[in-house]
Image (cartoon, rainbow, N blue to C red; front, side, top):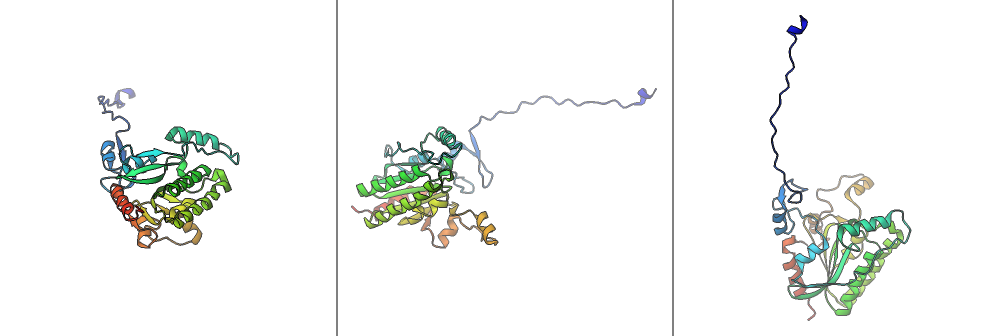
Amino acid sequence: MFDFFRKSKYVTVKPETKQKEIPDGLWQKCPRCGEIIFNKELEKNFKVCPKCGYHFKISAWERIKLLCDENGFVEFGREINGGNPLNFPGYEEKLAEAREKTGLKEAVVTGLGKINGREVVLAIMDPNFIMASMGTAVGEKICLAMEKALEKKLPLVVFTASGGARMQEGIFSLMQMAKTVQLVNRLNAEKIFYLVVMTDPTTGGVSASFAALGDIILAEPGALIGFAGPRVIEQTIRQKLPEGFQRAEFLEQHGFIDAVVSREQQKEVITKLLAWHSQK
């Protein structure tokens, strides 16, 4: 009797709908504004968000392709590899993983390049290789590029992108700051033009050594530049930092860098600077 008045339970069955499958690798989301961007469109726009101007991180070889003339780059120093001087646990595996991921042996690519027909020595750091942190091999390759510029009397163009010193190499990593600064002094003495372009991020020992010593210092829009990060500074001084502190635009306003130059304009601007500072 009671079962007769009990409400029956009904289950609504929705018809199956086929969702369109979007292949991986076709789209990217802008970390700043959230815009969904077609990858081919992003590449045409120099890996810069068309909506907000956010500069995506790019590899060293992508930057070389954007900067150098066709077939205008010859690499040197590729044989220089980083080791594990302190026998830091797991470091060799981390290096092997970074090499497999990037196809590089270390976090900077060095070589002779041509930019609109003008010969230069190039050193371009790759943020995808352990945050482009500076260990012994990176310092050695930067110094090699400087020595090549001195030998050939060519301008030196360096693109920086680094999380700072490589902690797994301890004092050996910190020594690279002194090594690179000594070579910058030699460039100055020989009046070799030294141009630095800071990209996101340029921090730690790199920002405190050769990156901050260019004859001209440019930076990409929005690049984080400084020794310690904003959070560390706020915790240390117990004060709120100004809006935009340590970003490229803030540093330009306060005279730390010479100009903020978007990626699409860099080749043209660098060509003009090379012409103005040419020794020939």
